Image 1 (cartoon, rainbow, N blue to C red):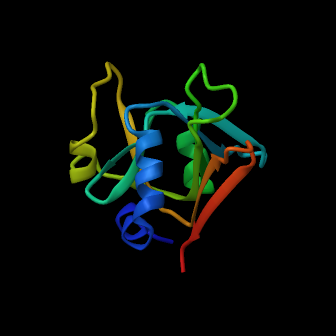
Image 2 (image 1 turned 90 degrees about the horizontal axis):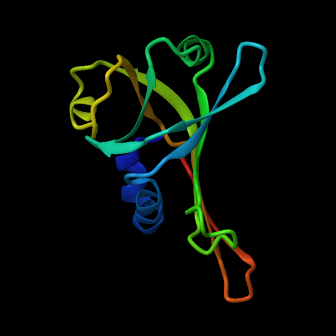
Length: 146
């Protein structure tokens, strides 16, 4: 699996597409519950120190779930008024790795919260962009880590 920096070096256009759709926006991240079912939750991803990162509240059950099975998928949300999907979509999947609060990527996290957070780097196993052609057909671009 790759870091965001490795992915961006290998596929700069695809990474730029993804960054544009994530930056300053909510995305939806799926992790695996203890019973194996998916848990989907909104996150505010950010990119810093060559890593794609997310945070969870320190009281979240996701903390235990990720410790047991670190696989995730993250999917960007469409703008609320884009029902046709013209803005395009970006999805990544891989594994989460906890970061120390002193890690440079965590120090660069935008915004503050009144509650404690646990921070993760998202490795990139696969990235997929979906855009729509003039005929409204989906056009996919995909990258997989070596």
